[in-house]
Every structure is written in structure tokens, then in C-alpha cells.
Length: 290
Image (cartoon, rainbow, N blue to C red; front, side, top):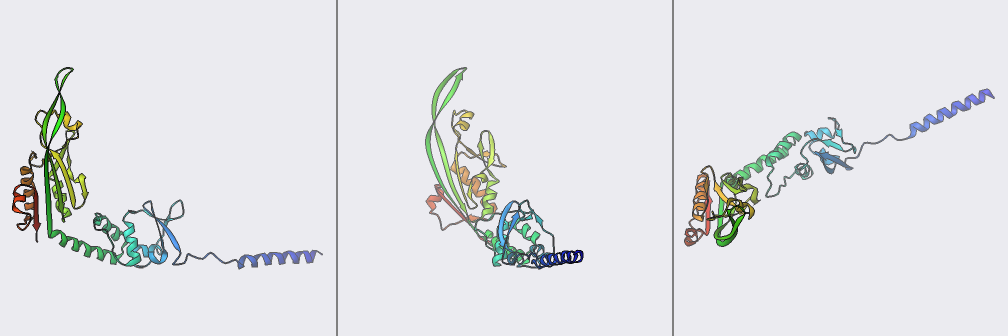
């Protein structure tokens, strides 16, 4: 009885070991399985095949097991880099083609990220794109449409302590719609022209509608209007620096813009607009060929 019990117990142990060995080991994810990345706090879902599409890149080394990877609290692979521009890098891994929006303004950042990930074909594609953009910037067009109107502004004047009177005055209001194919020129213009509001000067670049289009609205000095009324009624005045000159007429505006444009290689387009429009400061068109 004791011998049979010992034999039986030994058989149970053997069977248990055999059953344990029979279970299949966990398999690594397939190349086509989805994988989620946390890049600087932004999540992307792709596949190992995409991430290793350029084996000599840093991403290729990271996801082929040649380099260690970090995980976030959710178990996603974590990369401490800019998450916003990674979408363009990931799309390049998928298609081997660089696709950027026309108004893309993060070329320097994208180039640094491409250098970090060491995707050599992407680095070369960015170099070609920058050469293309540089050529496009050399030849440029600048078009300015000007409008002016006169309106009445009402305000209170303090004549003595606790004594106020209502007054009004005519006010010249100016509007300039500026379009240029050169984003760099608009940035240059923005470094020269400033709004005066609330007693402070602020660059007009903060009012860019898009990289190629700028709309300016300002007023001339109003006779008798107290300084605090400009702030109260949100009336902006326009200044040019470093000359520190206030622009109180379209003639002064045109003169200052022409100085800036001509110094940047622009010249007046004699074929457009009509001479009367140009002389009347309604439409200004300049071109640049390099």
C-alpha cells in the first residue's frame, strides 16, 4: 500500500509538469498588430511594420529590440519628444512621402525631430523642401488695398473736479488689407509697424490672419480726445519704429511701407494697378524678382 501510494504521487507530479510544459509561451506582437505610442503626451496608433520601415533609423532600432523602450502608466511606448509634429514623421514612415500643409510654420522644429529620429530619407526630403521654399520666397508679390473713412467720435471732457461735458469730433479711420506671397516679408513688416493701445506698443504680427494676409485698422490722432478715451473706445493708433513716427495719414503709411518693401528688394509693378489708384493711395502692388 505504501509503495503504490508513493508511485501514484510521483505520477501526479510528472503529469503536472507535463501539463505545465504544454502551455504555449506568449508570442511577441505581429508586425501588423496595432501598437500605441505616447509621444510627448499625444497618442498615436500604428504598427511595428511602419515603425521599422526604415531599419537604420532610431525608431527602427527602438522597435526591433536593439534599443530599450520606455512605457507610460498605461503600458504605451513613451517617447519624450514633440507630439504635434510627430504626425508628419509617422505619415512619412507610412508612405515615404513628405506631406505638409501650405501654411506649415514648424519647419525648423520638424527638421530637428527628423534629425533625432534619424530617418535619413525624411531628412533629405526636408532639405529639398527648404530649397523649394527658399526659391519661392525670392520671387514675391505684395498687394495692398487701402480704405479710409471719417466718422464722429463722442467723448466726455473733464473741465473741473466733478464737472464733465459731452464733446464730439471727426475721426479719420484707416484700413489696409495686405497680401504677400512672401511670409518672411510680412514678418519683416511686423517688426517695423506697431499698434499703440492702452499706452503700450504691440507688434502687428499678432494680428496676422494667416502667414500671407494681414489686415490693419487704426485711427489718426483725434483733436481734443483724452488719452484714456482711446483705450475706453478701443481706438488703436499705428506707429513705425525705429523712427518712432505715428502714422496719421495714408500718405505717411505708403511712404513707410515703400521704404521697407524697397529695402527688401521689391519694386513697383508699373502694369498694375491703374496709375490713378496708385496716386490716390487706393491700391499698391509691388513685385520682387531675384
